[in-house]
Length: 526
Image (cartoon, rainbow, N blue to C red; front, side, top):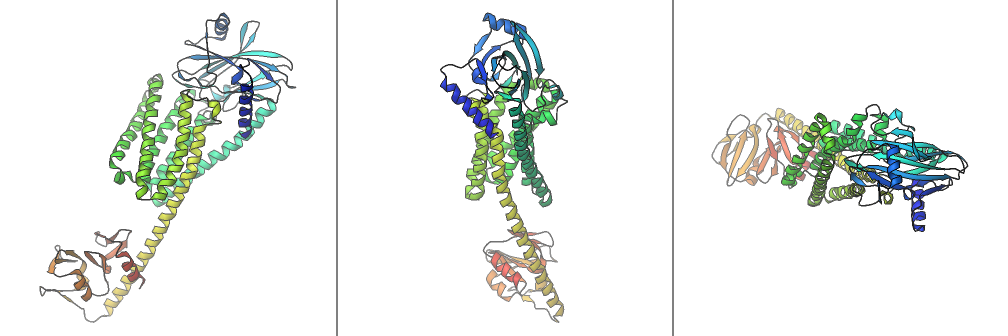
C-alpha cells in the first residue's frame, strides 16, 4: 500500500515535468504505477463494439474528453486508448483498474487498424470469469521486450459514478502488491470484526441497546467497505452478479440506519434534542422503507440511480448535521464523551467528503491515495471504540457500586429484622392527632407543606398529621432514613437502590436526592 502511494506520487511528479501528457508509456520496470497521465479518453452516448469505436476514433467522430480518471456520475460509455513500449526484461505485465464497481469492461488490442478482443469482464459476469482472480479488474498483457502495443479499453457504468484509475505492473511487482494488500486489509477487516463481536456480546450481556446499534453500524458499514473494495464480489456474491449490483448500496443504507440509532442512544437525543430526534426517526423509517422498495423493485431503483444518489447524499448531509449538533449540544452533559465522538466522526466526515468530491469529479482521485471513505471509517471506529470502552467501564463501575450498596442494604435489613424479633415490646409513634402508629407499618413518609403523609403497608390511603419532617425523624427508629428533602423511607421496605431512585418491595419508586445519598450510604455501611 505504501509503495503504491510513493509510486503514484512519483508518476505525478514525472507528469508535471512534461509540458504535455505522453501517449506512449515507456515501461522500464522501475516506473510502475498509475498510467492515467499517459492515456487518451473518449466517450460515446451509445454502447459500441471495439471495431466500431476504433473506426470512430480514427475518423474523429468520437469525442475526446479531458478527464482521465473520474468523470463522476455519467450516462456515457468510455474508451481508454493507451500505448505501451516495453523495455523491461520480462514480457508479462498487468494492467489494473483500481475501482471494483464497474459494470462492464472490454479490452481490445489494436493491430493493423483493427480492434482484436482480448478480455471481457465486469460486475455483470461471475467472478470466476475474470482473467485475474483479484478484487479489482486486472488484465494480463504480453508484450515482447523491445516491442510496442496499443490497447483500447471499453468501460461502461451507466447512471452512476464512474472512475478508472489505472496501474501498470510487472509480474513480480503485481503479486508483491497483492500480498501486501491482502495482509493490510486482512488486519483492517479483522479488527472491525473483533469490534463487532465484542460490542454484540457486551450489548447482549448488559442488555444495552447502544452496544448493539454500534455493532450493527460497524458490521454493516464494514460490509459496505468490503464490497466497495471488491472483496464482497470476490468472497460473498461471486456467483450472483445481479445481486452484487445491489449489495454495495444496500449495505450503505443499512449502515445509515444503525448509525442514526447509535447516535440517538449515545447522546440520548430523545431527551436532549426531541425535535432533531423526531427528524432522525423520519429519516430512519425512510431508509427502512426505501430498502424494502429496493428489494421489491430493484430494476426501477437502478434506473433512477443518479437521482437517488443525489437524494442519498442530501440525507447523509442531514445526518452529519444531526451528529455534530448532538455532540455540541451534549457538551453540557458530558464534555469528554462529546469531544471523543466529534473527533472520531470528523475523521469519518473527511472520508465522506473526499468520496463525494471524487464521485462528482470535483477533485482528482490521484490526490487521495487509497479509499478515503474506508480510511475515515477505520479511524472513526478506532476512536469511537475507545469511547465505548470508557462507557463500558463507567457502567461496570456503577453496577458494582449498586451491588455493594444493595448488599449493605440487605445486611442492614437483616440486622433490623433480627433486632425486631428480639424486642419484647414495640416502640410506637404518637402523632399530634393522638393517633398511635406502629413504625414497622410505615413504608415511607412524605412532606406536603405543613403536613406529613404516613404511607402504611396495610392502608390504601396515607395517615395525615400536622408536623415537620425533621421533628418526626428524631422520634423514629434507626431504620428510617431521609432520602429527599420531602421523603423519609423505612429501609425494611426497600428492595433495590438505583442511581437516582429507590425501589420498594411493593413496586413503588421513590426519588433519591444527591444531597441525601451520602447519608444513606453511610447508614448502609454502619
